[in-house]
Length: 159
Image (tube, rainbow, N blue to C red; front, top):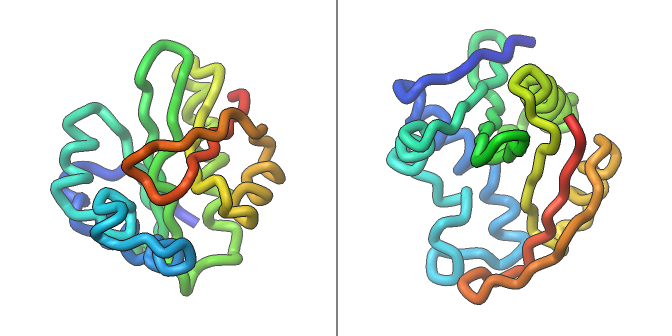
C-alpha cells in the first residue's frame, strides 16, 4: 500500500480514476450527460485542475506503482473539511482501499485542525450509505437540488 499526495501534473490520471470508478454508479442511478453533466462519471482533466487551483488536495492509492484509487480533501473554512471524489477502480474494489483512503483523510484532517469531515452522496445509494456508517459517519440532512436527478444525503464524522 502506498498513498501519495498528487499534484496538478497528475490531473489526467486522477480524472481517469474518478471517471472509470463512477460509471457503474451512473448506470445504476440513470445518470447521463443530460441530467447530470457534472457527475464524476464524466470527470475531465480540467475539472481536477480547477480543484487544485481552488486549493483542493488529492491523494492517490498506488498498488504496484499503479494508481488504482484516489480521494480529495477540501478545507472550505476553519475546522471543516470535505471528503471528495473518493474513487476506486472497479477491479480493485473489496480490498479495503476505499476505507484506507477515508482513514487517510480523517488523519489528514486531524493534523490540519479539522473537527468535522463532511461528504455528500446519492441519498438512495443505500450500500454506500451503510459503508460510510460502518466507518463512523452519521447521517445528516437529505436535500433535493433541482439540477440533480437524485437527492443528496450529507454525512459527517469527527476527526
